[in-house]
Image (cartoon, rainbow, N blue to C red):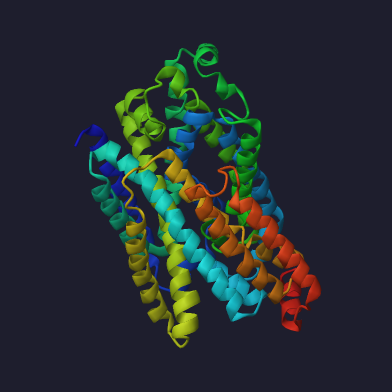
Length: 481
């Protein structure tokens, strides 16, 4: 093991220590699920950025920027900023007032129906599992670069750390360590990415060299045709909207805030810091082929960290990729285990379960989900495309319930039947389209999340117009307004 591996292991041990220390006060279900609603704005910002920018960003997004140009990847985060401001200053306060423990809890309260809650729980489990696979693929690439381990050994080691981390600490450990990792991500964006430009001789020289060797990076659609580029731009912006407004691991951060005001402040901080981080990271990696065209896109970030910056900085950056995987995956594990234990097993199999039993079950569910993710991550060939595809497939599932979530707090007329049929029809459609695109049965530019969002919104509105909201639904709606 070389210098980079030693530094990375040191940081991983530090993260694990901090997570266990932070989780020492996790004694109740409320602690484990929502850290007893005690998070200030900075911690919320840190966990939102760290959970959003997983190893998918450092390996998959940078690889795509290297291969096809950076502008489409950067543009997708414009919607993240807009949606964050909307959630922080307007919509999020209504979710906060519902005092949710899990995202499916929203459907139980707003649309009182076990069938709606079951659908919501299935969306969480399917999407979180596939999302975790995408993160594990990216972190395996980083672990191989750092330690020289085989993909299987890398996968087992990282999953073991994440499982232990989540079992012991719950949400409190996740949030506190996320805030630390956020600082590491900023280092990667502001030091490692710009090292490419400095190595090329500065911005002016970099542009001259790129104009000759990779002129496509100055086009908004990169190497793609304008039509395909537009479809990718549409899909990635919908991804950003969905991630902010409907991804369970990000939406759950509303419930951990001390107050509505603290959550609003956090989203303002995010709207300022995220563009700096993304432009510093993705735009600069678009120039890498002008410096070294032989680097495989999926290995772009590890190569720069090892070759263009001081070894200590590079080691921290590479450990940041693993930190990103840990931060995102612990969030995903926490949400998936909470849904499996509370929204499925407790609700449908053992409703008389005590809080202590539920806390224990939640921790065992983390282990069960880890085994499933391990099986799903055993792919022989890892590319930037496979990481991106798994990520897009997972986030597409959220578009099935996005209309029911947002219109549920903005529109009094949204009904239980409308929410049920919206999710029941759009979710299978999204999954089928995702599989069809992966197997080549439909064009690659056909975006399941866009189609799913249009279908789920249309069905919710039409069915809700044809049915009547119950008196209990109207009372709930009025109480959060």
